[in-house]
Amino acid sequence: MTETSNSSSERRRRFAERAEGGGLERGEWVAAARRLLVAEGIQAVKIDRLAKALGVTRGGFYWRFEDHKALLDALVEDWRERNGLAMVAPLAGEGPPIERFRAFMRVLIDEVDFSPAYDMAVRAWARTEPEVAAVVKAVDAERLAVLAALFRDAGWRPEEADVRARITYYHQVGYYALDEQVPRAERYAASELYMQALTGFATGSGEAS
Image (tube, rainbow, N blue to C red; front, side, top):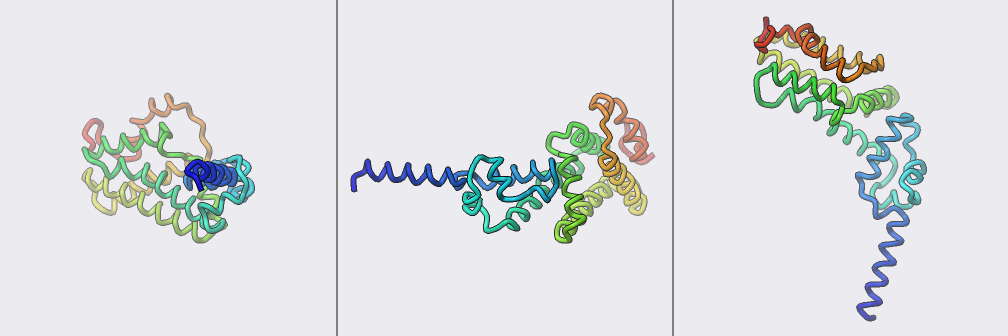
């Protein structure tokens, strides 16, 4: 067989693979699943729906995933890595507690790396799936632990730091659950007042008052 015919065969193979969806990366399937989850809930995250949204046949799905459950497991991990880390990273970073808390608020207000809609969609899913509920519980515990550590760094006693962490976190989860639609500029304008009320930081000091 000539080199030209080999090249033609390879091109045909790759074209057929792409037509079946095998050319799509795993992350593209997960991103499509994420969009469906947020828009319509977990009941919408079906292989046929994903294939249609991506413009491929469902056969391509099995190039990247063993089965539907493997996709759902990847989706949960995607949420843990994206939303979980986005909220934790600024709190666990370098700098004075007050600046770390402000960085945390920017993540929540800007909603660039962190998606409240994704959080709420996963929480709704968790109400019907124990395995997902366990992951959500673990992520909540991690977020609370990092918040409590920040408050301890600011000078609060451990038991006070834990309570402050819970008040702050429950406030934020409640804000999303109520689907508040406050303009970003308005949220930024009130952010320092919220910070003082939630954290007890003395104005300008970043320490417990």
